[in-house]
Image (cartoon, rainbow over all chains, first blue to last red):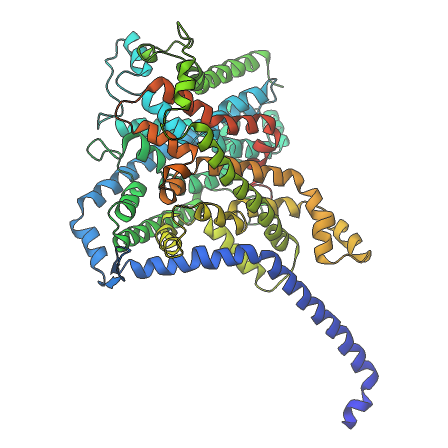
Length: 319
Length: 276
């Protein structure tokens, strides 16, 4: 008591300041959480809890009608041990990702470089090239694609002018996956726009001083454009891999996974297990395997990026 | 300076490439007016335009016309766009401007969810909505948009808000504005262009989000345009001319919005993940 009275003046002053500060901090704490509440509630309810639930269900047998039955690791053992469809759909999906992601990156970079030069009519070109991506995942485009690449489609007619015998692109197991890859590659607009933004951020002085040093076009591309663009390239690569692993609509509508499972994409397989056969436990195990694959590939990408992604001086990307 | 020759070759490459990209779409317009026999030709304009492809396609289902399906889809969109824009703005302001405990942690979680394959959550979500009796209603389609509108949009808006000078906030604070006042009077009016981007993207993506529609809607009277088109495709004897006519109509809302708001659109994507 007495000690307090002695030190009263300075202490209460400090206490008042820190009290106000604390009150302030509490206020912004409350306000912050109030503002992010919609996302936070949604995250807990529609993401975190479902993830936990899905993990649990992957160890059960569950058909929606009765309570889930615990079966231990049976689902996983069956998937890896006995399910040929799993092996098939995984290899189909890997083939799809391995071809369509690099194809998309290549085309979008090529076009982005052409568009990055200050040219007249750039807006018109950009719109034209972005357009297919705008309508991309819609069922309308799936219908269009199915008609174009049908046995009676106009693609075969054009090919016949060059003496190429047409096939039923979608109904032939040798060409069906390729046709879906082509559809996917046709929609490279978003990737291209991100490259374009990246190209615009490369300082022009670099090119100018390289010109002074007598560097040619190719040399400039390899020593300036590619390294400066590598973070954006990496961003597109990671998103491209994740996105391609989840391709659904085209396989569902155009080919229905066929012929002979040649386009039986993983997302379609999972969908059918869950919502056609109502094997919720099995489908959950498939979902967790997908999550593991995507996580491993993303991690590998991140590790590999150390060797080819170039970040400017101070260690991190200009943040 | 680029030489004239390199400029010309650039134009040549871009125009050929644009034409190649757009050809299927240009062909589509003509094809929607073609007779069945002419559909295998790469030519654009039909010998005799079959305008009835549109009228017959519009009424292809004996129960409902496409007016009904378009109405359903627009109704769903009203909820999606409204909920998405409103809540994304709130959440983005929280992350972009306010200091609170564990902010960094939650923001990393938000970014992490962008990499999560939707397949992991879809089964339990379906079970949940099924238990609540919401399957075969629009609630499972619309409700998720009210939880911040999606990580991608929150991130986009946070980037945008961080670009607004803090002096404005400080000035408003001195004038006695609370954090809520600053949000409504300063931030909200300034992020309008970004909100337009969010609205456009939400509209087009949920129009195309076939997976969710096929999962949750099963009765024909609630069908969206996408589901109606699929019903068309699955018919035993597909009337291709009519189908292509209706599919072409179905992309029109997205196309019109895109053309009207083109400027926001492409810049909207460009801001993402790049400027920090």
